[in-house]
Every structure is written in C-alpha cells, then in structure tokens.
Amino acid sequence: MIIQPKTRGFICTTAHPEGCASQVKRQINYVKAQPKLEGPRNVLVIGASTGYGLASRIVSAFASGANTIGVYFDKAAEGARTASAGWYNSAAFEAEAAEAGLKSYSIVGDAFSDEIKAKTIDLIRTELGQIDLVVYSVASPRRTHPKTGEVFTSVIKPLGGTYSNKTVNFHTGEVTQATIEPATEDELRQTIAVMGGEDWNMWIDELQSAGVLADGATTVAYSYIGPEITHAVYREGTIGAAKNDLEATAHRLHEQLAAKGGRAYVSVNKALVTQSSSAIPVVPLYISALYKVMKEKGLHEGCIEQMYRLFSTRLYGAAETPVDEKGLIRIDDWEMRPEIQEEVAQRWAELTTENVYELSDLEGYRREFFQLFGFETDGIDYNADTNPEVAIPNQR
Image 1 (cartoon, rainbow, N blue to C red):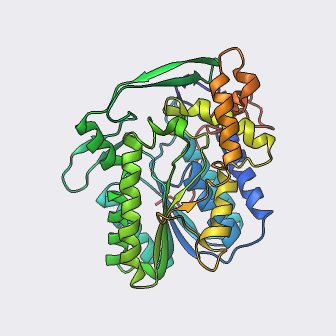
Image 2: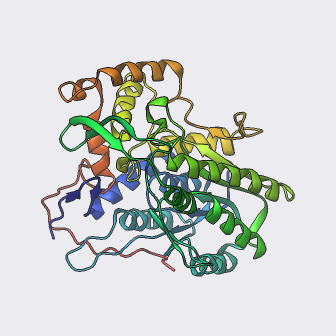
C-alpha cells in the first residue's frame, strides 16, 4: 500500500515503516559517532518505543554495548491500518541490535499491569540474569490500576483558575488564544495516578523482590519544568502535580536502593517535539520559538543528543552525578540559560499569525512532528508501494 500521513488534531493516525527505520538508523549512527561509554550492561526501558525512551535504549545499546529489554504498548498493522510508529521504531532497533551482536528483547503490552511486570521479570531471569539500569519513560493518557482495577484518565489543565495564552495550530500556522478551564479535584487525582510515580515504584519493588535488580543499580525517570510561559498549563497544572509526585518517588527509591549501592533520579529534560508535547496547548508555540533561538546559537539538541549527554556527562561520565538543590538532574540546562529564555520571551510577546514563521521555527516543529511517524524523512519515496506488516524480532 502507499502510506501517506493522515492527521486528526495533534495525532497522526498512520506511520511509515521505512521512514521510521530511517529515523532510528539516524539516531544509531549519531551514537556510533560519539565516544563509547563505560555504562550499563543490562538495561530495562519501560516505555521504549518513541522519544526519550527509545533514545535511552539506543544510547545504552550502541554507546555502552548493553543488552536491552524494551517494554511498550504498540500495535501491529492490521488490514488497511498501519502499525504504530513505536512498533516500526522497535522493529528497526531490534534488527540493528541483532546485527551488532547485542541481546535485545521486546515485550509488548500494558506496562501498568501485573502480567507484564511478571513477564518481564521472567525474561530478565532467563536471558540476562539481572539488570543494572531501569529507565522509566511511560507516556500514556490512561492507566488501569493493577490492584483495584480503577481506570484513571489524565487531563492537561491548570489548577486554581482559568488560563489563557497564545497557542498555534502547527498545521496551518494560525496563532490564537487558548483558554483552559481549571481541573477538578478528581481530575487532578486521576492525572497523578496516571503520570505520577506509583507505577515506577511498583516496577522497582517487583524487580527487587524477584532478585533481578543488581546491587548498585540505577533507575531514572524523565520530567520537564520549562519556563514561566508554560508554567500555568504545565508545571503549575495537573501535569506538574504528577511530576512532583514522580520526583518525590525518586527520593524514596533513592533511599531504598542506596542500601545496596543503588540510586534513583529524575532527569529534567529539554522541551522537544513529541506526541505528548503536541497535545499541550501553548507548548508547541513555545517549542517553535525555542528551537529558532537555540538553533541560531548552536545549542539545539534532539532526543538522541539529549540522552547521549545525559548518559555521558551525568549518569555514567561523572565521578558523582551532578544534581540541583532538589536532587534533580538538569539536562535542560541549555534551554534554561538566561540569554536563551530572555530571547524566547521577547519573541513570544511579538508572535502573531503574520510573523510566526519569521520569529519561530514552526516549520521545523511541523517537520519533526511528521518525522515522529516516519514521514518527511529524506531518502524515502512516499509514493512507492510499501508493506505495512513488519515483524518485531525477539518479541516476547
């Protein structure tokens, strides 16, 4: 079939297998061109098929030579429907890892469930023995609690009052005002249940109890803080409350693992084009302005550059992992430089539909969005007949 992008709002409902494979290959080639790392040997990435999770798996495998297990919830092609981008990404990663002689396995299913946790533990015990790094990078709008069966749904809303600010339709370039009503107490509770630290804590507890987490192991989860421009809808909203819970979980896990030389961190990462960030009002316009400024100053990074820098200068490249006063790893340090934020804030005040392409990198944002799904990738013939049915090697 000929596969073209089909969008519905901030979601692309199709994905291109060859385009996704090319994007994965580009990330792998970037890592191969960097100095090797003395890093982890056996790695579990929970939420491994896109974004920071995928990049973490690539850095672990191709910079450190680690064996990896990826857990993710993606769908294969069926009839006229393509597979999800994460499925194609993972298939490409597995093929590249096999060619490099690395052990890699995929577990496809609901990471929140007891069943997938047990299945993962059995695989670790059988194939790897123990793991020394756990990356938690789950991005899901819903969660079914494995003990109670309650289904939680997250929302992206401010707390305490109605919020209005600029936003952009990145398909058309139209800059408008977005107004978002505040979350209810129950919406806040549910968002924390989905995006907070409870499931991360459950994973570490289960891995430790099963004896498959090595002494001295590291675990890291990902967060975002960002500038004042986005605080009301992000850091001071429902998502921020969930991230506060995630960070509190990191402190508890750090104490729990320290008894055997282990450690737990939250890494605060840069704002990037992801499926998740595209769904948050205001954020796509901020990212577009940020990209323009950081590219002009030679400081721009994508997922793979961020994760290589995280591993090489924070988690494994330093005698002691540098953290801020709250115990957070700040790999968003380039984004948050005062001169960067001052320039972004100045452009933000001036941004309109008429000048959005001049003052921001909205075109770059839009292109990266489609590249998440394997489109607009150099070297791919999108008018060619393509087989959407791609198998994932080593799927368990």
